[in-house]
Length: 177
Image (cartoon, rainbow, N blue to C red; front, side):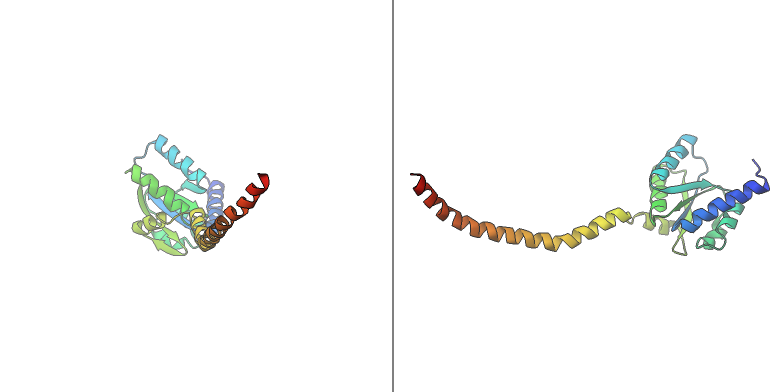
């Protein structure tokens, strides 16, 4: 289906705004994927904050011109699906996880932080834990010394309190008798 000039300009402006907000672009070849599988991929991507788009490569090249993703313009050939995400690892994780279960989705490359990524680079990016997991790990590391100190102090207080409690309990029993 051919787009007229105004439709092409609208697509370019939409993708340009996506590229301006995104940190990561992942490109994958989708040749041979069923509609049901593509729908599953799109819903998974949507839930993770990833925007997937099937675009004409010439429009995609024009849309990313002048952005950090311009460096992968020469890789935009063949039937590609483009995944943009504001989260640094979300697009790579969604595409790589889907590619593990569906051999027809072939990762072609991507871009992150102004640098082009090859297939291995995208897979390595996908293996990085999400921002929420990293923040939870950092918080756990920060709380660890404090919680250990609190446990030691609680144990000391219990030990000291445990030695004094029977002495206090004896006079209370004597008063009751």
